Length: 159
Image (cartoon, rainbow, N blue to C red; front, side, top):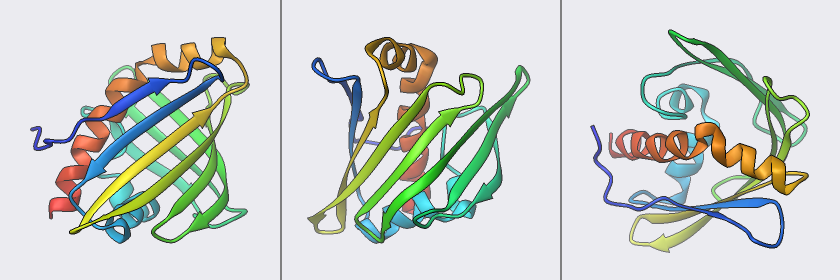
């Protein structure tokens, strides 16, 4: 079920190996931030529909780390990283690695902007070490996961 009226914009930067994702939510920054940092909420929305999610560890603080696994009938897909900066309702800086391609580490920055009237703009950037890595990231099906995940996040935020 899709309840979103918001567009998820995913743009590959032509000058650096970076992907920028922009999305607005009908919820204040505090709720959007909590949905990104509370494991009980994260499992309800992160990733595409049709996948189950298990969190093995999640310590959302500077110096903390995380590992989670998505699974379906075709197998398991594990992801891990470390948190570098966490500022409530404003910012999360972390690394991101798909364990199926461990040399492909991305540096991710998620910024939450208060638009007023209970709305938030999320801008996320993922910087990788090469244009080839960035293009592989985009070709991996990541767009489906991001778009469907944010649609699912809309549903979580509406509750």
